[in-house]
Structure formats: structure tokens, C-alpha cells
Image (tube, rainbow, N blue to C red; front, side, top):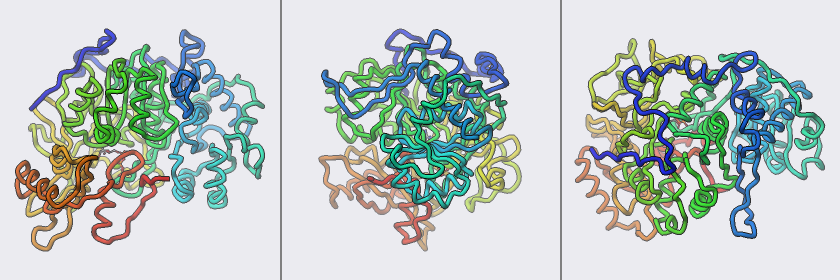
Length: 595
Ligand code: ATP
Ligand code: MG
């Protein structure tokens, strides 16, 4: 097994910890909580993220740099910068706006704006006011918005004037709980309707003096919807106590130090964009870069360069798109400030890890977690060897194990058993009780209960743990293909296909077959410069057979321009399968579309 050693920190900053084995070298969540200190009245995420910084040394430090579309005279993309002091002032004002409208503790606040400053202000201001916050993707159409706001019993929505006109007017009557809509944008003032308030006017009518609402560790804080990769998205409820995980993982998995310029590319409509694009960098008092635009390979290299990003957290799909764009684009930019690169959301192919080392100057550190876990649980950590293709090892304070998987029909009988032998496939489970563990699926208690067996939270992912304690992703329990008595994880097949230089991305499914149960079918998009023809198809089939053996290799390959993705960047295999079988597509609310 090849191992990539972690490059020493470029700016001389050593990783924060050097040994976390055994009982995690004395690590305890209580110590993390002690380090964070007590918030007035208990534990409120906004206190740790904002209040405790604004009167201290960080006051004049830049908290956020919002990268816009325009260029300055010197040819750089113009940014709008917010200091911790200014951000804190706006957050307190927003707290007062909510109080004026009678929106208080436990009330649900939805934010649908795109990545503009108001999203960040509203999220923290609502947390500070004890509300439960749910940022949603701004690209959602009216129906997905209405479904989520209804399910979450939303009382207040923050949106932009464009989205208000295009989406919200269509759903207003369908969501009776929605008492107030705050609209951001110049034209908002001209289009008042009942229950609609102009954001800027509301902010200007209040002052920035506001106590923080006391909340305790177990009070709900955030509502995150899952990506909808395997079915209808579920609403996972998270509490203020999750802040301990956000803080510790920022240190142990992302290597955040005060001097860092951090860029998490995820949108806050996905849990990664809230946990690591909003909360964690604020907790660590680092400067965060926020790109207000969508992915564009050239732009992203430019941002890394111009903003002198030191720590970068992104997703495999973005890395694959940068790989597809070719190395010449990267060479036009200076990436020397980059110190640490991490990725989450989908399996990260070994090639992508190595590409990071060769093109970005740093290997990509894969890490694993879920909406339900609230924060990173398993990671290739700074200072430790990376095993390309592995998700890494459990972070301090996380007890991850492989347990007996569900039967092939998805059913379970009795409690699960821990599998201690290395390299045995089973379900990835976490011992319940880490601070950011979700506390329920909205309106779906039965589904929540199914996630637990005795002491264990069952992730629904299949994995293996090797003798060194590294975890290897096998597939989602739902996606595993059963063919001629073999259980085949799509990831292994996709990985092998992507080793071929022509393949940009692959999605693999099982197609029902009367003889062998299911046959393996691959959907493949090719890199620019390659022709998806019969010769290439035969070459790929032969490559897969040589690498995987005939039993596991795909029997058919279909070339596609692009694969369907969720907005969080995951290949939607269930959609490939439904289309293949001519079945209804199911919930496609999170499907990425060009709009
Ligand atoms: P849904 O639960 O609605 O089907 P989802 O599981 O994709 O959607 P998320 O919570 O965004 O929603 O994603 C978590 C899942 O993403 C994990 O359970 C795992 O399958 C996958 N994942 C995350 N990180 C990794 C990783 N590093 N390697 C492999 N898979 C990963
Ligand atoms: Mg899931």
C-alpha cells in the first residue's frame, strides 16, 4: 500500500498534535468544552463564534472576505471584507430585528440567499437569539423550498429580492407557518407585501446592543437536510453543544491556526458549508474566503492565488473537475501559500490525492462524515501519513468501528456486533454520544431509531478498517450490487475506471438480471481530448477486467457527457438506476441543474 507523507507545514507552523492513539492521548470532550469556556447562560454557538472575539484581540481582524464578480484596477477580483467587530455588530442587530418581529427561542428561521454577507449575519444572529436555523440552497425551486420550510415549521425566511419574486411569491400561501419574510436587495423596498420586510431597513431601525439568548447544550440550533443521494432528504436536528465538535475538528482535521486564510468551498445549504464554511472558522478566529459565484476552474485557481488561501476544504467532484481542466491552468497561478488541502462528501480516488500533491503542491486529505454526525469523524489528519484511497482514522474523541452489516435485504436481527479483525467489510458505526450527534430526523422518529443499535450509531455506509486503523470506504449499504453471489461496492469499480487516463468520472449501478441477480453497468464521462467511441469502450472494459476480474468488472459501459450530481456534489446513482430501468425518478429536489 502506498503512503504519502504529510509535507511539513510551509509557514513553519507545526500541526497541533502529534499523537492521538490509545485513549486519544488524554483527549476528552470535557477538556474541549473547558477550553471554550462557558457562554452566558450556558452554551450558545454564537457566543463562541462571535461574541467572545469582538471585544478581544480579533476585533479588527477580517472575519470574511466575500469574493465578487468585478475586478479592481489591478486586475484582482474585488472582495467585500467584514471584520469580526463589524460582523458582530450586524449579528447583534439581526438579533434585535428578530426580537422586534416576535421571533424567539426555538422558532425556525430559514435562509435562502446564496453566499452573501446577509446569510452569515442571519445565521449567527438567529443562533444568538436561540432560534433554530436552516440555510437552504438558493438554487432550489419553489417546491423543494416549500416542502422543507413546511416540514421545519418555518416562521421566518430571509431571502433576496430576485428569489422572492421567482420563488417565494409562489409558495407563500402553501406555508402558513411563515409569518415573516425578510428580503435583501435594492428593489425589495419597492415591492412590499404583507408580512414582507426589507432587510436593510429593518437592520437600520435597530441598534446593535442585544443580550445573547441563553441556550443549553441540548437546545436545538440547526436543521440540516441530507443530500438526498439515496432517497428523499431527511431533516437532521443539531444542538448548540455541537460546537465542541466544530472546534476540535477545526484543529485536528483541518489544522486551523490563527494566521490561516481558510476557504471551504461548500454552500451552507449543505451541512459542510455551515459547519465548516460558517461556524468552525469563526470559532478559530481565522479569516474565511467566501466565493459568491459557482464553480469555475480558472476562477477557483485565481481565488486560491489572489486570496493567498492557506487551508482549503473542498469536495472530490471539484477536484475531479480541476483534474479534467488539465494541469496547465494550475501552472498559471501561484499556489505557494497553500499549506493543507482536505476533501469530503464522496470517495476520493487515490489518483486525486496524488494529483493534489503534484499540481497543488499538497496531497488531498480525505475525511469522512455525514449530515447526521454534524462534523468530521474520520480523517487523514495533518502530520500523519496519508494512505491514498483511505478516509483516514477516527479523530480524537470519536470511537468508530466496523460492525456486522445488515442482511442483503436490508433487515437486521438483534444488536450489531463489533468486528475487530482488520480488513473485514461491515457497516461503519460510531459509539453514540459525540457532541455533534444529531438528535432526530424532523417528523420521523421511527427512521431516527433505526439508526441506532445498542451503543452504536449505524452510518449506512459499508467500510473496512485495516491493521493500522485506517478506514476504507466500500459503498453505501443501499448501493451495493449483488452479482452472481458477489457483493460489489460501486466505488471499487468507479475507482478502477478512473485510473484510466481517459475517464473523468464514473457512476456504477447494478441492473437486474435473471441469471446472476444484477449485472454491473458503468456510466462514464471522458476527459477533454478523448473520444467516447467503441474502441475506448472496449479498452475500458478490458482495463476493468484485468484490474478487477471478470466477476466484478462492468459488463456494459455507457458514455455520458455528465453524470447527475446532488447539489453537494455526489453522484446520484439511484437516478442513473431509475433512468436505466425506466422507473420514476423519485425525489430530485437536490439534483444539480444548470440554471
Ligand atoms: P442521503 O442521506 O439523503 O442519501 P447523503 O448521505 O449523501 O444523502 P450527506 O450527509 O451529505 O448526505 O452525505 C454523507 C454520505 O456521504 C456518507 O454517508 C457517505 O456515503 C458519503 N461520504 C462522505 N464523505 C465520504 C468520504 N470521504 N468517502 C466516501 N464517502 C463519503
Ligand atoms: Mg445519508
